[in-house]
Length: 232
Ligand code: DC
Image 1 (tube, protein in one colour):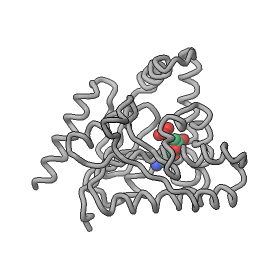
Image 2 (cartoon, helix red, strand yellow; image 1 turned 90 degrees about the vertical axis):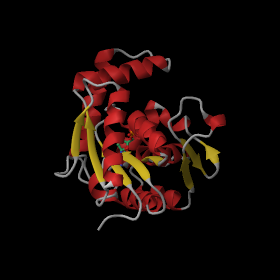
Image 3 (cartoon, helix red, strand yellow; image 1 turned 135 degrees about the horizontal axis):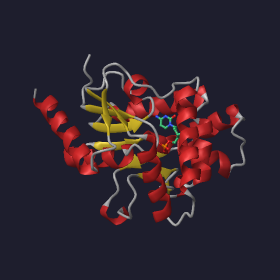
């Protein structure tokens, strides 16, 4: 059965361009952009802040249950390069969750089944009341299995590592390419081999390799397709 609102579900590996592409598609269509990775990052951020080891599942679950997570498209005053604004109990953590330490922690808490259950439910509630572009690793088959448009956004390993390298450098991070490449391969491996909802390509997904396209070309392709589907 088709959902009441239009849902664009995007999955894909790290640095495929999911965030930037999803944000721009959402802007063009006037949809809400939902970065689900941010929620796993918030979970890791909270655990680090409260000195809870990533292995202490009951403590992480308890903390998560009493935490209010809000996300919205950045307002004009918040436009500082962020793709989304993330509030945790009212505190703006949009940038605090973007560190390498939080990213590594997010990959760990994302393996906890109980954490996934809580976050998936939050994501489904968000998508039940408005049109969304939602991106992550399990959106096309777990969070929004009935989405009207499903996309697996990917790119060649070298191209993705190069993008990630440039992104880190632009944020003042002096890391070498090989380190970034190996880290990316390791994250891919973690995402694709974990027991709880691994990253995978579903049969009804449109597989879009972004290696040879500009961001704008990719956005145009997705917006055109969504418009055709919405007017059908
Ligand atoms: O996209 P990202 O780097 O912000 O994601 C952070 C981590 O969360 C990453 O290890 C993958 C994981 N994740 C997930 O397991 N499921 C999602 N729907 C989104 C992200």
